[in-house]
Length: 244
Image (cartoon, rainbow, N blue to C red; front, side, top):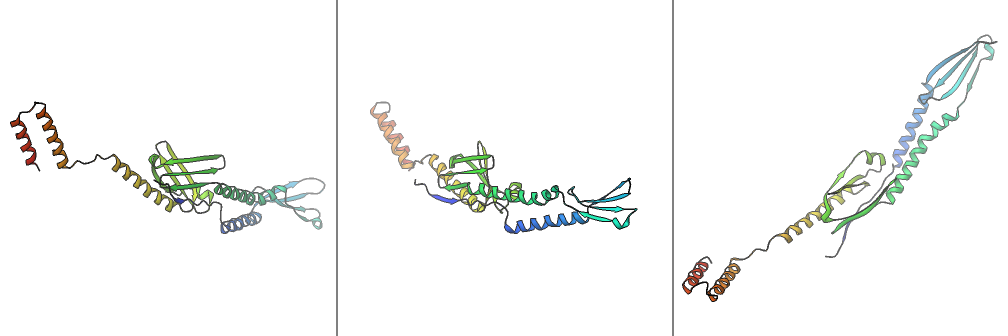
């Protein structure tokens, strides 16, 4: 039977532009709220001039600004606002990690493939340190299901995981956009294969006419060998013919 391609999985990962915008807005709100509603820490220093320092620390644990009050010299009151390098790390690191993760997921999706034919399922998927090949004929497949789990949420893209199970275990293919269609066609083809195997292994039924003909030939052979007498042969023959 000629092999035909029935369906090809479509992989798409990485968060959408809408998700990125929401992430950046939430990140900016956290920085602003942390700036205005951070923890206040007072320090008192005794020296030539008594100094009172006020530090504001947001929930990132970063000192944002310092206010110095000279008690004996009110005219020298100053407010010094400064941002430490750690603040810029907190400002830039989450978006940077977010975009790097998105780029890696999209690259991995572009290197993955999964194909269904009328004889087998084959493909490959690469997820960071995991690089796996699959070539599974229909005779080895036990079940195919669709899942939506934490990995799909983490990778983004709105895809689903196609799990192909066999006697030796299972293989997961995340971020499949047409997971339901692929699984439905694969299960239909698997059912066709199982029915064909059942039909091939079933015994060929023998018609009554063929069975009686073979028995008559056997009786004739026994008669010719002298095992059956003419009367016995005729009695057995009449018995078989009466069953038609």
